[in-house]
Length: 410
Image 1 (spheres, rainbow, N blue to C red):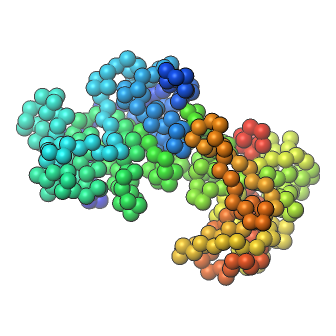
Image 2 (cartoon, one colour; image 1 turned 90 degrees about the vertical axis):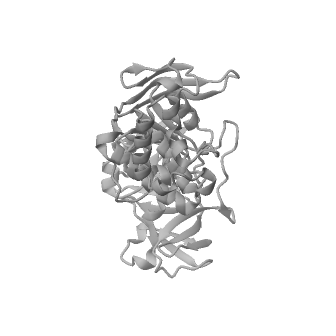
Image 3 (tube, rainbow, N blue to C red; image 1 turned 135 degrees about the vertical axis):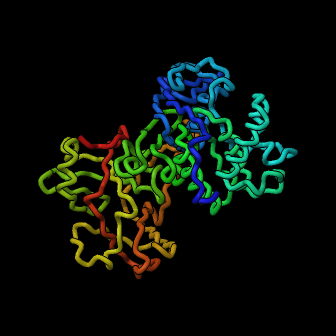
C-alpha cells in the first residue's frame, strides 16, 4: 500500500456507528463462561483493540459483535439499534479473518467485489468500487491475478478490499496479520492503522500481540479469562496499569513484579526487596495517598526494565537507589542490552494460563534466586558472571496489593 494514497472521501459513503456492549455474557451449553459482564463503548470512527492471552475471550467477543456467536445475556447495539437477534448479514458490518478466506478460483477483482455481486449491486457500480478500493490498497496491477499468485501481504490487502467495498458501519478484524512473517506484520499493521484513520470506520481489532495492540489502537481493552481488566489509551495502560495482570501483560520485556515490604516511615519512604532496601521517591509516595495504609506491610513492587540501568553509566546515582547482583545473561540487540540478573526477592506470580486450574509460568531462577530484567545502554560494559550494580528509578515504581492485585493509588 502506498503511503501517498489517501482515501477519496467522496466515494466511500460511510455511515459510521458506535458499538456498545452492556453486561454482555457468553455461556456455552457445557457451562463454560467465555465472557462475563463485558461493558464496552466503541465510539464512531474509533480503532479499538481487544488484546489478551489465548483463551481470554477476545475472539468470542468479536464473533458476538458479528452475530456469529449468540449472546447469552446483556445487550449489543450498533448505532441506535439493538442487534442481539439481528442476523449477521443485516448488521452492516464487515469482518476480516485470520486466514483471508479468499476464493482461489476467482481473480482479485472478483474476490473484492463478490459480496456486492451477491447483493445484486449493478455491475458498473461494482467495477467502480473495486477499482477505487484496489487503488487505495495498491492492488490495481493485481486485479486479474488469482490469490495463489499473490504474496501474503497482498492476499491480506484483498481481504481488506473486500471489506472496504461493502461500505459497512464497522470493521471487525480477527488476528488478520497472524499468518504473516515478522517484518511483513510490522509493515501491514502500519498500513491497516493508516487506512482506518483515512476511512474513519469504527474498527474492532483482535490480537494476542501486545506490541500490535499498543501501536495500532486509539484505545486498548485488555481481557483475561473473559473479564475486562482495563480499557484505556495505549500510553495510559503502560504508565498506569490498574492491576498486576495488565502491568505484566503490557510491555516487552514485561514489568518486573516483586514481593516487597514498605518501610514504616512515610516521610523517608523505603521499600525492602529481599536483603536489600531502596529509598523511594517521596514525590511518588505523596502522589499515591493509599500507600500510607501499607506502611510496614508487604505489597507488590513493579519496575519496568527501562527504569533500571547500569550504575557504571550513572556514577552520580545515590547508593540507596542501587541493587547489587551478578549478571546471569545478556542479550545485545544493538540499540540496547537486555540484562538478566538474579535477586533474593520473590517474584509475584501472575496466573495467566489459558484456563483456570493450570499453573502459572514458573519464574526463571539462578541458584534459587529469581531472575529479573533490565534494559541498559548498548555502551555498557557489563558482562555475564560479573558483579553489577543496577540503578533503580524509584520515582517510577508501581505498587499493587498482594491479595487483590489492584494498583495502589489514591
